[in-house]
Amino acid sequence: MQAQTGIRRRRVSSDRVIGLLVVVALAAVPRPGIAQKTNGLALTPPMGWNSWNTFGCNINEKVIREAADYMVSSGMKDAGYRYVNIDDCWHGERDARGFIRPDPDRFPSGMKAVADYVHSKGLKLGIYSDAGAKTCAGRPGSRGHEYQDALTYADWGVDYLKYDWCSTGELKAAEAYTTMRDALAASGRDIVLSICEWGTDKPWEWGPAIGHLWRTTGDITNCWDCVVDHGTWKSSGILAILDKQDGLRVHAGPDHWNDPDMMEVGNGMGEEADKAHFSMWAMLAAPLIAGNDLGKMDADTRTILTNREVIAVDQDSLGIQGYPFEKRGDIEIWFKPLAGGEWAMAVLNRGTGTRRVEFDWAREWVSDDHSHRAADFGNKKYRMRDLWRHEDAGTTAEPLSVDVPGPGVVMYRLTPQQR
Ligand code: GLA
Image 1 (cartoon, rainbow, N blue to C red):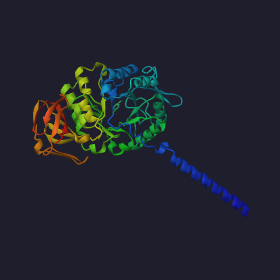
Image 2: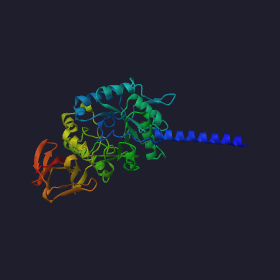
Image 3: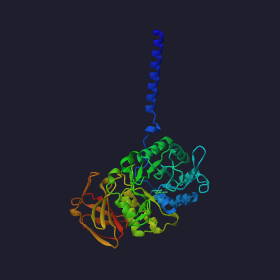
Image 4: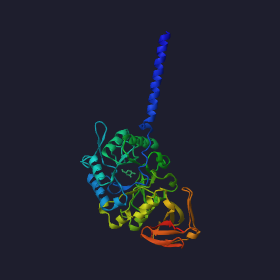
């Protein structure tokens, strides 16, 4: 009996050792269930183009290849745009094993060929899916296929996933997006995760650990000041979207951005409104994802989208989102702290008709509680650079007095003067 007991004891103890080894080994190996998002993929807000605002469901591989071509030939690539993002409606059916395939009529060469083409231009490819059973346009969603889909995207060479929120029923947003985050991490490829949950469940609170950017609102629409009611949902013009960013800046920073949606620059609002839209997205440190028809872009639109001085404000390495410092009716004065003690300033005219705006620097102390930065304009002089005229505009030694078109903007970069 004793001998048997002894044997049993020895067996138990060797099982324990093996169990311990397994636990130690598992703890050392990153597992999907405890994955983190892939860090460092969006240290500045992502820049690119997305098919949805212009093409909706009318996309195919020609549209995507041409977008890549135009991104290069227009100078957008040189200005910093990188992602060519395919939105909804690229999908075909799932195969017998559940792997998603692109629509064979729209993407006959397959998605890997499209990715290879986009990469050959020095650009990156984005794709779209949905956490629910179906995408917003009724194509197959990723629910129940998250790891398969992430592997498929990685295999194709996808660099960016916009992950939407239609047909999600009782799903909890943070959990559903965590599943895709973990699936992407397990795929072994660096893929930006763009959370498109429309701000419903406050993604700014849980998004930073899960994705690289999150939509803060419902869909944008191509107008300056409107909200369009579609029955079950509403889309918002530029001002309505801008106003919904209130209070969210504390949640954003390098690798985790508030996303006020893709841009409508070049889609018909007119030059001054487009400049204002682009400027305010830069002040918000927003992702700059163009949504116009790049092949039909006129010179004004190209000039706006490739304004490097405005882009530099958006892409500033500190990644601090700007804020409205003062509101005077239709006039808003915004500041954004930049690296090296510089500041960006936007004077926004929300209304119609040109307005003269005065700003007496000597009386202003601009301080930002969030970033703990301050500009004592009364005691320190700054050189001013007009970012749309591309010319120096004096210093803060003199009060500012400027005409601002309505709707429209005047935007400056303020550089501390050496004594
Ligand atoms: C949702 C998203 C949009 C777009 C469409 C596609 O509405 O918010 O940005 O992706 O779906 O169906």
